[in-house]
Each structure stands twice: as C-alpha cells, then as structure tokens.
Image 1 (tube, rainbow, N blue to C red):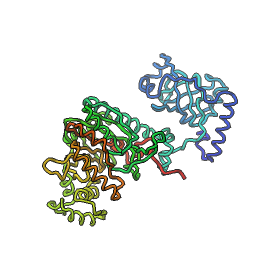
Image 2 (cartoon, helix red, strand yellow; image 1 turned 90 degrees about the vertical axis):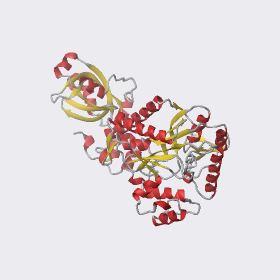
Image 3 (cartoon, helix red, strand yellow; image 1 turned 135 degrees about the horizontal axis):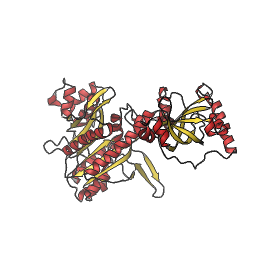
Image 4 (cartoon, rainbow, N blue to C red; image 1 turned 135 degrees about the vertical axis):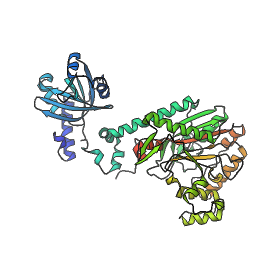
Length: 499
C-alpha cells in the first residue's frame, strides 16, 4: 500500500504533489510531449494474453505503453504498476537492476493518478498475468489532485456528473456506457443511410422557433440587431427540404428547450429527426420498430434486454393502441362513449387533480388524462396512435375522423422515445393551425408555437405526401444501457450552480 491510500488532508496531498511538480519544472522534465506509444492494453491482452511465458520470452515482443498509474506495489528491488489507458489496464513490472537506481528511485515517488510511459518486453508473472517488463519509464503528466479511492461508492451523484473526467477515470462501466452511446449513434446513421436517407444540417439559431410545442431559449445577434432562438426542433427546416425535392432526409441534432430538468429531461438533448416523401405514419412505425430491434441486436448482442430490473423482448411485435383504447385499458371505469365530450373529460381531469383551463377542448383533456394515467404504465414497446388534432398542430388530420390526426408516439419502459405523424401539407390548414397556436400563446401558453409565414409559403409551393418522426437518442441510450437517469448518458449534463 502507498501513502495515497492513507486518509490525509487533500490540501496537504496537493501541496506535496505541487512540490514534486516544482522539482520537475526546475529539472526541465515537466509535461514532456515527445513520448509515443505503439500499443494499447486491450490490443496486448487480445494478441498475447493466451501466450505462454516461454513463448513471450522467446518472441522478445517489445512495446511502448502509456496511461494513468492506477496502482503500484513496491517490493524492494522490484515493483508492479497498473497502467490504465482508454482501452483498459495492463500491468508493468519494474526492476531496479534493469532500470537503474536513479530512475527506479524516481518511480517510487510517483503518485497514483500520474500519467506515465513504459517501454519494455512482454512477460508473464508467476500468477500468469500479462505484463510489460520495463526497460525504460517516463513521467508524462503530474497528477495534482488525489483520485478518490471508491468513487462508485460516493452518495453525491451530482459530484460524479460535475466531475465527469474523474468518473470516467475511476469507473470502467461509465466509459462503457459512452462507448455504447457512440456505437448506437453510428448504427443509426448506417441504418438511415442504407434506406436512402440523406443526412443534412439545419440551423440551430432560428428567427422563429418551431417544430414543437416548447419554451425556447432566446439570444441576440448584434450584427443583425435581432433576437434569435436556439432551436427546439429542426422539423420545419427539414420539411422545407422535402418541398425542395430532397425526398428522404434526416438529422441527428441537438435541441434546446427552456423547461424543467428531471431524470428524463435535460435543457439540451439529442434527437434523430427524419422525413420521407410518399409515406405515411404507419410506415414510420415499422421503420422505428425495425431500427430499435436492430440497434439492440447490433450493439447489445440480443433483442432480449434487462432495464431497471425488468426484462424486455424486442423480437416480439410492438403493441399498437389508439389513445382512447389505451385510456380505457388503464381506466376501465370510464365511459368509452363519452371520451370526446369536453364536459365529461373536464370532470375526470379535475378528479385526477389536473388543471382545466377554459381553452382546453376534449383533445387536450384526453391527452392530459392519458399522460397522467397511462404513459408511465406503458412498459413493453408500444405505439400510441390517433392523437387529437388539438394537441397535434403539425400533423395531418385523419380523413375519416378530422378530430384526430395520423400521429403516433412510441413508448418503452414507461417513457416516450419517439413522436411521428403523416405531415400536414395543406398550407391553408397549416396557417389556421398556426393561428390557433398564436391565440394560445396570447392566452398565456409559453409553449405554443409562433406563426411561421415562410413555412406556410414553402407549403404553397407544394409538399409531397410526407411522414416524419423524431426519436430521442438520449432516452434510447438510457434503455439500451440500463441507465436510470438521462444524466447517466450525457457526458456533461446541465447542473445547478455549485455552492
């Protein structure tokens, strides 16, 4: 055990390490930049882990490794060091007689957390552990702040999120989560590209925030002397591209919404949003079902997953229910024949403790009841369809029932992951819906949409029958990595100010 493992005042330890750094500076050895490694821990374990000690000795395989010193065991004339790089850990074996008295003595003063370089040949210890027998060593970067001994055991999870750099050093499973996140995003790109979709980029600074009902962040552009908004969704720009003849487009985008934070919400988040001409919402449900199943198979290795103590089988066809059917399934005491009566739904909403405003029609109330009593219970993969037009200002009305739209939302584990619909391409209907949103905003709804005259003008040029959808990347990653909070899948989640 080293002094690093003894409980000492952190400021004292930092002062000790700064003294060591001052000495390195004086000797011109602080923060060198010429060292180059030629192998990583996972490569060495994979390529040589099964080799016998005799084969390694005969082969004289020599490599340069580098990484963070995570443990050291000093035994007189020999020492062991655990070196961690981005791929994992490998052991270094250091001998005073091979390195020389001065370098070996220098090594013994190094601290846990220092970044070091080790050059030498591969060997196996008596216990069979693959190691690098050090022929030269170098201190590459001095650690000044002691690493926590048992970071995963800390109860202050906010500290882990704030100091993600330490979390990543200490917890291999955290690094694995973000490696898997990258794999998920890469798979989605490949999936969409294979279907003939074109990846595009649309503005993050917008003169009119649109494409969703949400409260935006606002900023000011000095040169133009105008207010701009961080986008809440790329939808209206992507559909402009459909008008322009780019018939299949997608964007993996960052969105910003000036709303509350929770285990499912962060002010900035990542979405996959895509639009396909000559398709309807049913085809996009099929696309999302196939995508979710395939990404699980590719990244997790199975369609059967465990998330938060519950088992899921994505190989089973996903359930599809209308909003009314879902409300009745979980509220069998309600009168199914009265789910479009505003007065009846208002009474139900009030009994549930929901706020009922004068401007709320049956569609808004039904949706509020659904969100209150049904959403959290939709554990198995489920598409909810037939959303009321009142809460779907951009979706196409159903031809047989104009009070509802050809829209779906996708749920799994009690959380919404995706929203999609057959797009409204009638410019007059869209203009009327925008005016309704403006009236709602004037009445005090901060999340209602603005009137976007340019988008209406684009529709007047003619947009092909189109379907579009957005899927929350963060929530999908939460599900596929069994993470309870959105903060667990964001490298740098938004946090309250430190006290």
